[in-house]
Length: 340
Image (cartoon, rainbow, N blue to C red; front, top):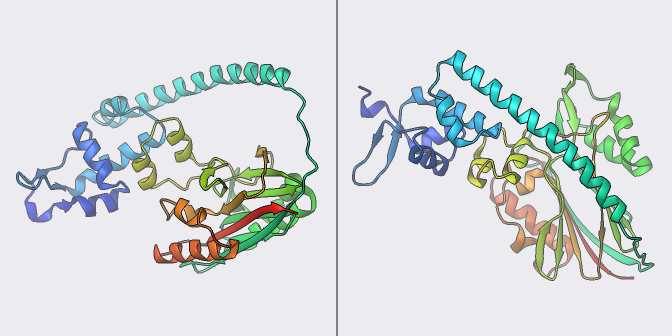
């Protein structure tokens, strides 16, 4: 029997497994990951180091979107049988996805046929802009930004190149998304086919009269503050975010998952960007953040909805990220819209 003095506390086990204590308590309640020892008086849990493999398997299966009930079956199987069960699950996911794709095609066709002509406005808004661009605790700065009255954009580079994000934004400013993709294609080396060793996200807002035309690839975000209420306009292109939106991960699981930053879209040839148009009103505030901001601040609303000049808001957000430890590059652009 494992002696108590070699057991791991729930905090240590959570850190080493990439799960939060809250997730571990959930998995205990469900019988997926039962601690070796539970204090009868405090309810405090302790785990054996040998349980880390099972914990990481549970986390990975959740990343695939596998329901907890099915995970309970898989983790108790021998490796070969578990592999067969995972393969069977994924075959079903692919079949379901193909069916939904046909439904989506039909629905999009119907909605486009029902679209009514849009009214246009000649109203022009004045943009007051503030920004913050910090390296954080990283050795290199791989974020980039553009902040002009006509274009505000951020990009978050990754890999072994520091200049890809800035190059992508410069190219986008000249010729849009296609130019951005082709502009960095020659600069992005690849370690393996279809697996770039360098790359970048890109989130851009073109300000056109009273319309914000948004192009989004990756996990930076566009926020809208209207009537003192904050709304996230874009959707993160990460595996974990997709599962969270589908209800296949809890917010606590998503926040702590070791693969929470795994992108499923970046600026690569053939990428399909999210492109939307947002009607603006006088008094609106737009904010763009790289994930070095929103990944480390749970609630941006008190900061972004405050009544203050854009530069003061950007500085306050940067200060909050610094106080949170600023483990990553972090960039924010704040734009207030007023009648011209």
